[in-house]
Length: 198
Length: 198
Image (cartoon, rainbow over all chains, first blue to last red; front, side, top):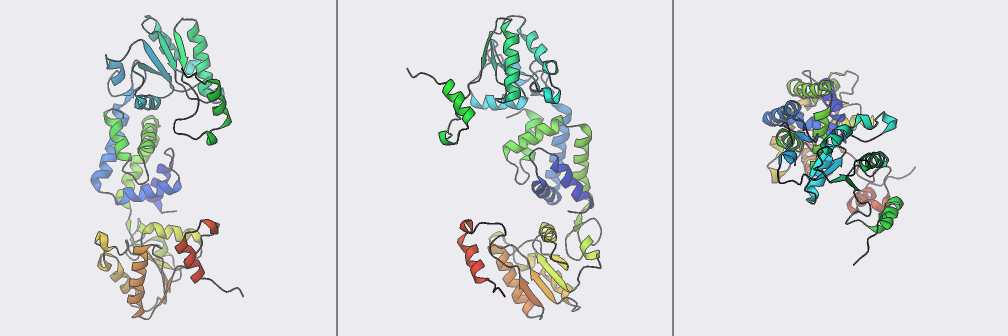
């Protein structure tokens, strides 16, 4: 344990996600010895993010404008919406470079244990986006865990009444993975979802 | 990749030691959504460390006073000095709760490839501390790698001329480790340093 201010910084850094006591200590000592410019740039970056970044009015992605870069991009297919839990999921899907439609961020997943029901998610906003009939397909890209599955099921039932095509991301073996190390549930999904080779 | 301010913050956080692009992204998103209080406490902690923490006048440990808590503690044995490379090494040794003497931080190790020779380290300050003859033993606790070993050898030669007892931390198998996974050099040191059982 360090004295006073240094230990406070270690403690504060330890609140950051994925930062344990050892990494917090390394980061604090780095910040103590770093060039003044580097430290002020970090502090300014934190303040800039807090004042400038907010949620897109349409899809709730992160942006500094009223609407995000994807919603503003007229080359994106307006007939498809990919529904995700968090803005960071958009980054992950964009990195795959396969989807060219728009997104909708729910802001979480149904989780009764933590008091999160459908009304806490941005589902009403999604239904509003579907009112003009332009969207023909919704891809449910919530996480492949209990909460994400529950959310996808709920949305699938809700969307069925509107008559829009709904799909779910495929589950199966991760590419580059080893069959031997796949867990039983994933392997079960990979078998269920097997595709015929033409 | 995010837009503007958020990506800047991800980049800045990525400069911290041990923080890769994925962790930097997680930390940036956390800071974006965190409570205002938590963010301001982090920023204040960074600023407080930069203004308040400096090196102890005697041993160069980190402190907010002129001298560090260990140098001020009259219960610590003034006849022993443990020489370390960095202040964080003091924390590691203190955690072992075995050493009750004082410390001396060199501020690095001899590393000709990076232009660090004995004159760049706090060796002159160490020799000054030995002048009154109160210190009778020096423990060389530099890192068990090439630079640390070179520094320990240099110090051992220098201190031999003064007539103070000099020792080096034992090298051998880490406690709780598996013999099978020990590297050959460590195993060699463990054999060389073997102790007879009475």
